[in-house]
Length: 250
Image (cartoon, rainbow, N blue to C red; front, side, top):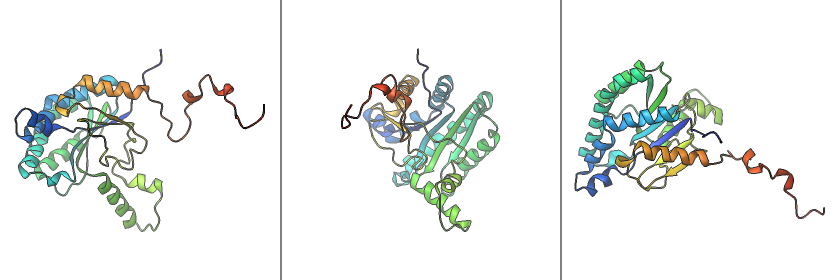
C-alpha cells in the first residue's frame, strides 16, 4: 500500500462565517464567535497533530477586513483574544508554538500584547507550529520585505534576499492552501511563499468545517502529483521506455 503523503504546512482560509450566521437569522459576527471558539481551534490542533501536519496557518483577519462594520471587527478581535487566553495551557501541554504574522501597528493593544507574550512563551516548542495571520495581506508582506532590503542599502533584489526578509523566513513554504465556503481564490495569502502550494476549495462554510472535512482535504492532497515545474517520477512510471518521437523514423 502506498504511504499517505501528508503536507508539512497547511494554510486555512476560514471563509463563510457571516453567511453561516445569516442563514440562521443571526447577526454576521455570531459566525465569527462560532468559527473562533476555543472548541473549534482545539479540534484543528488535534486533527493536525494526528495527521502529522507540522505547520498550520490560519488567516484570521486581512488588511482589507478593516473595511467591515466596526462592531463586526471588534467582535472578531474579542473572539480571538478570548481564544488565545484559553489556548495558553493547551499550547504548553501539547508543545505548540505560536506565531503572529501581519501588521503590528493597528491591532488592539491588549490583543497584540497577548500574542507577543504567547509567541515568546512558546518559541521553543516544535510539536506543532500554529501561525495566526492577523491584519495580514500578501502584498503588504512583500512590500515590507522589500523595504527591509532597501533599508540595508541594496539596489538590486534577488529571490534569496526577498525570502530571507519575509516574516516567514523561518517557516517552510505552504504545501496546501484550503479555502472554505466555495470561494475559489487565495486572496494573496502567502503571495510569494505559496507559489507551488496545492489548492483545495470546499463548499462547506467554515463554522461547519469539522476535522472530518479537514481530513478530506488532506486525503485529496495525498492523491496529487506535485511537479514544481519539473517532472515527477510518477509521470513516467512503467512507461518511460515505451515513449517514442513520432516524427523520427524507427
